[in-house]
Image (cartoon, rainbow, N blue to C red; front, side, top):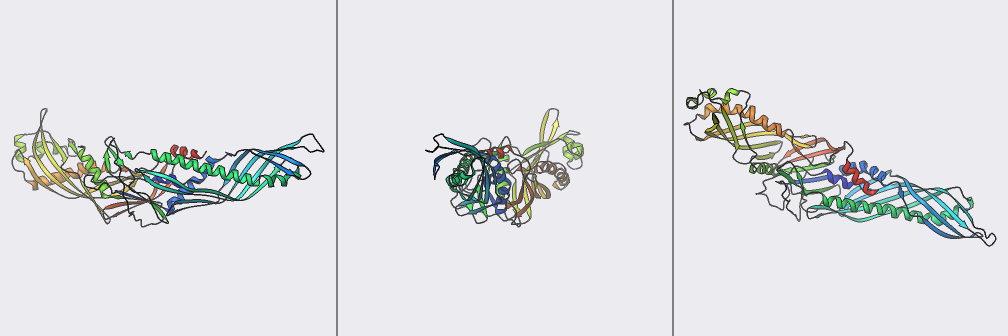
Length: 492
């Protein structure tokens, strides 16, 4: 009865953006759960929710009934247990007030023990009998309306309405006197229906209360590595349409173990478009997402590395430069070299229609090794322009980058002027054979889209548009998940 809630755990995504330049009340990620996504989770989890609900024990029912000729008959129904629930038709629908979930044409089967006793003035000795009975509840409709709010950056679930409407009950007795059958029906039909209604409604309320507590305890940031986390604080309240639910998340990279700021946006607008409207889930990432990642890792001084091994190792000896920079070889003949690459500013990522581009600004320092001493001899400024592709790797958003063009200029030199046109082919080779393979080895792994373990994106479509990347995908349930199963036991 509660399938929608679990879909909310499917979502969140890579989150970055130039944090120092982006207003704090804006989000960098939009998430839309479509009607197809809601239907998928409903179909997947409604049976699990039902299976965790049964067997469902109901309170005993006692009643004294006056029967002509017989007199007062004391009757008890005990061990009343719902052991089967069938939901042939169910519907989940978003609306202005929240999410409505209705299970129609539902039926359930109960088993119970019955006992009666009576005595009359003709026969002062007490007469009693007992047996078992089965009860078939037909044409039952179970429904609830669930609201969602932003409570200090977390999702708050609000149960607005719930109920159970029963239209038909039939009782079949085993044992006992057949002449008492109609009396049993008349006496207990209404009470059995009321007990079923109360039990199912209480289970729904308890389940929602526990799930709300679960959502409130979810962290507002997700660890990416030892230095960075994703700020997944909700921005504004969820937005409901007649066919989807939209969320906005702050979506910036923050330092690890730094509390995620609390942001709210009064009137957020979900702008997320998928060319295939049947996809279950859509996640839109602003280019600020990627730029804040580069900014954070740049400030943490992770964008610096020393190249001491290359495919053509002769490049890392002054002898290999004797015709390119003769003065270097004359001053340091046959000396080993290192190439010290350090980004001079965070890389800038840009998206346009069908294109992903990156502008990288770096300093290439030439170091000569003399014994244990490292001697910087010259520094070249590089402006690298690359383009790439974005893809899904499992549940990760990954990609590759290739070299389009680059420009270079001498920043400083301790060995005199350098002829850039002679050095350019060497630098091109270094970028193609060292820098790009190194970058792509990390980009190909990607960043995790924080989807619950056990669910997997399937047939994902990636759309590059002006300033954003949109992932439109179906979702499959790949394997059992302890978190989901634990949540489902809230109904038990």
